[in-house]
Image (cartoon, rainbow, N blue to C red; front, side, top):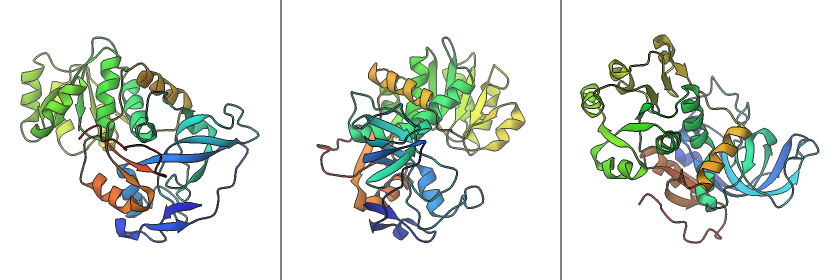
Length: 317
């Protein structure tokens, strides 16, 4: 099968495109004909070797954890799916080696859910990791009706999902970003706040009574600078900075969860959440997709396995 892979850590230039062995189907896995994947910052960080101490790595590595595709064959202990089913998945395993930048993947059944009927393959492929990260962060803080949520890095892949999910759950949403993204965030239902020095004052101006929850998807100093605006002690979560636990908050490391992914599918089908695709790239241009992700786009970068995606539209252009 065709796949993208690398044999040593490095920048995007280490990515190669060529033949790799077909995946072997285990009892708890589902063989998927992958139609699209997407790039997450963790992908190029792993490729650069930044997570070597945390995740055992076996070369050659096929990167990628997101997939959208069609079931070819379920394993004998995976009766949840049948050949022909359209699925999405956050196919992370406990080791790095066999990822989703490939024509076929043997994905753990626990990582899969039904693909939304109203999305393209590219849109669907952006949902699993980013959408689950947002969903699980907000769920950990029990965000709901009447909450005022502050999202740090609202224009990023995770932030765009967090804004929409929080709104769907009945919350008012503030989100930090650069001024060029203000109108974009308003279109998602958020009240934009410029990030950087003085962000706490700007949040106070926008929400004089404070916020009930803070979710951080970028790290740095902004999230801690806005703790003074938090009127509900401990209702803060970060996916980047583990020091959040010292403030009574939660450090979130997203987990594959079929039930959460199915709930996200329902939100998308109901029109309450829409995937934001910044751009699409063919599989053999994965290095360019990495570079585009490193530049910090609005939303997510998708990778297409074939040419049957239609226009591969850019929702966030």
